Image (cartoon, rainbow, N blue to C red; front, side):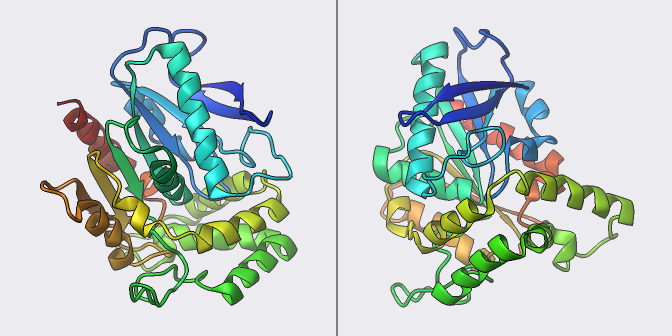
Length: 307
């Protein structure tokens, strides 16, 4: 994978990793898998996935603005701005590779929210299929649609808990980074089986906290508020492309029932089943915990999308 860059319409320089280095994306055919990281992450998250997927398809993994090697501007801390950036990335990639390319985005955590917003704003015609990884369509609890504690985010679900999360990220940043790892890896959330070694746990903690530390905590705190309040339930009903919803049974973020709302909404009112689910015996970062299964299911889904 090689880093490349382009500029969004507001001048923000955005980074992405690509499996086709230099100018070799010119004339690429078929499908491009877009690996989209979560909150305070980066394209580095996919170190166990990109090479395996790139053996059969073009793989691109962007760093969202405010994350990784992309610019960290003072503004743009909105899911809608991140969706607009994705739209510009797709235009940029098609300029290099040709208009025949279809994309299969894999949105992990807030990456899923970016995709739902993209569909709401631009439709899903750019996509051969869509994959959503361990994210419910609304983090807040809400009386609308009986969206209660059984479906909302476990820890950030109203104005008070959102403000608490913002304080943690801005005033106790190091502990917030560590707390994120403990929330997102299944072995901290009661996943049965052999526990990882202390050396492995230390390596995982160092890897993920280093990536979070690249972000501006004040900017992340503003993004938390936007992300937590954004309700994507009706937007999901606009999806027409084949959809795969991946969920971690030991997610420290959401219940399976909350994440299954995406399957229900995507299939609602359709003559044929659009969305299917896949439950992993993992936590929130299931792509990291069980990369072999994750990679295999992504490749199988992309193959089906090509039929």
